Image (cartoon, one colour):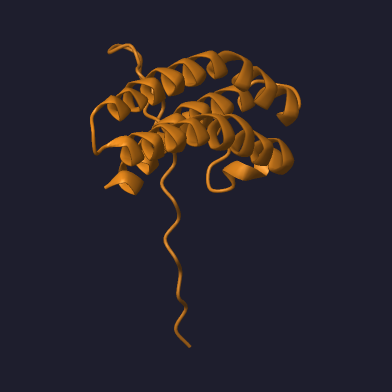
Length: 137
């Protein structure tokens, strides 16, 4: 249970930093600059959440018999927030650059989303593709 809880919280922090890195990589400029901007904007939120949560679980150490669990939870949350989410994930994103988003690169995802159009705005229909022609001999 301890492992699952720490992994779940770490995943939340990684989603937060990963989403911001992706958002920043959609802007022009180098990938390293995008990662630096993302870390600058999300580090305070991740650090605060990690410290508050770690402190909350550390307070469980006051309950007899739960000292080890309290210590393990607090340490796991601090490591997940600071080492994984604020060091390893950004470092990997800076090293790999925009290739980290190989399935769908930033900027292309917006091209695949339906656009909201004015109801009276009509676009011309695209020409129908030509059927495959099979010639019999």
